[in-house]
Image 1 (cartoon, protein in one colour):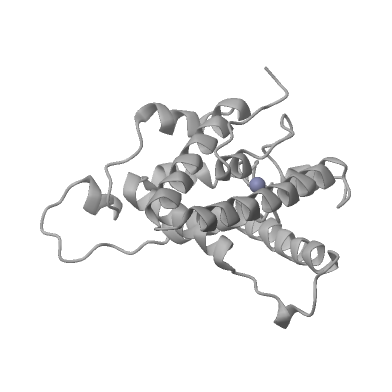
Image 2 (cartoon, protein in one colour):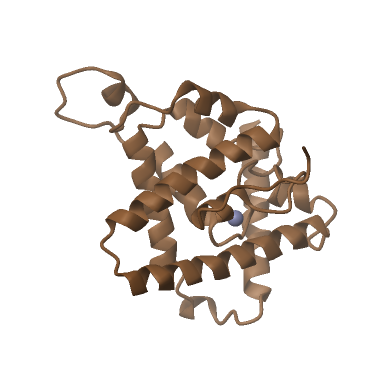
Length: 220
Ligand SMILES: [Zn+2]
């Protein structure tokens, strides 16, 4: 099962690299700045939120769930410049080390994190097989994490506005990626591999979250 998953993720990486490389404006790989300030803002907002909320390993598994044995992530759209740093931060958090020098044994030390975990209704929603319920929970979580960092990172009004403009551009790219997968531009299985949880949607839960927008799904 793991092997199949690894193969599909490897296949994704290769195809995603090709998609990015073939995009207009892509220069030689060495010239591109892969992890710019906006990427880092999204990454650290997510990592910080995971620690602050004390998200459990079980909830991390829900956030990183895939479609079946060999499908793509349910909550993220591949190559989306907002989904990818969020997913990267969750994978980093998944590998978090134990917290040393703590004599008290409680859920924080057991889960190797700072908070006490998500409310049960949020954990249940993240596990839901219904995209509408699951993606709404993802949208609200990421939205809270981005908003917290936006308010606590000492940005001036002008800097905040620049960041919001940058996030808007990236959300547009994410939506274009979703539309290209829905149009099967990267093969008949595009949706299953690259936007596996988004058959019902025309918007990205994570991208909307970055701009404090709720999620609108087509299905009721
Ligand atoms: Zn996205």
